[in-house]
Amino acid sequence: MAALINVPTKAKRGEIIEIRALTSHIMETGFRRTAAGELVPRDIITSFTCRYNGNEIFRADLFPAIAANPYLSFFTVAKESGKFEFEWIGDNGYSSTASASITVE
Amino acid sequence: MPTTRRRFLSLAGGVTAAGTIPIVVLRPLNATPTMLNAAIRNFVGEAPIRTGKIKLDIPPLVENGNTVPMTVSVASPMTADDYVRSIHVFNEKNPQPNIGNFYLGPSSGRAQISTRIRLADSQKVVAIARLSDDTFWQAAAEIVVTLAACTEEVN
Image (tube, rainbow over all chains, first blue to last red; front, side, top):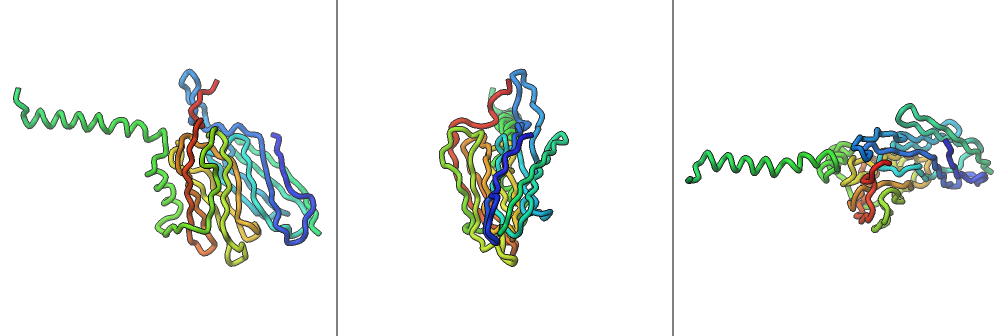
């Protein structure tokens, strides 16, 4: 699934940078009904993780109260050049990943 | 027919039963304030929750409850011995009291997160931060929602 990642490509060492991650997902709450009255089964992303050169820097547990196409923004200290890896895990075996690189001077 | 004790009691029982039924039916639909408190206590335990340090930014009036921008920030130096461990957001009237849990660390640099949430009704949203010294800080906001999330039917 398509993910939109916003990480600065360059940063000074020690600078606090903002990371924004958006992925496309329906986030079906499991509380809605069809016109026929049947409950639509839950289908949400339950967990998001961000790793910076292999170290976990941010994690989130998501619930049905998170809007469709979950957007998350958080901060980290730019310590070294390398890679950010993003992982979304959800219901029905859903899993998707994305990554972004940064150059730290 | 004069009102006997038996008749009175059976009537009173009927009224009580009728009065409690709607509450019982409503409970699974919406998280009541009791559920909000239970969810918070479930996570915090017996520890005291203080107000301050944490800031919850959310528009006071939203037209569409399906996507409400929210930012939570905590005043913290974010050093190795004094940082925010996690931020937890709860609501009062959605079908579930939880909105999200966000785990940070000293490498976060700034204790601030943003996301977009769903609100099923006008209600209170509570954010709680757990700091590295295991103290809990909370902030609450009342939001008026014109178009609620979750109520529409799926086509």
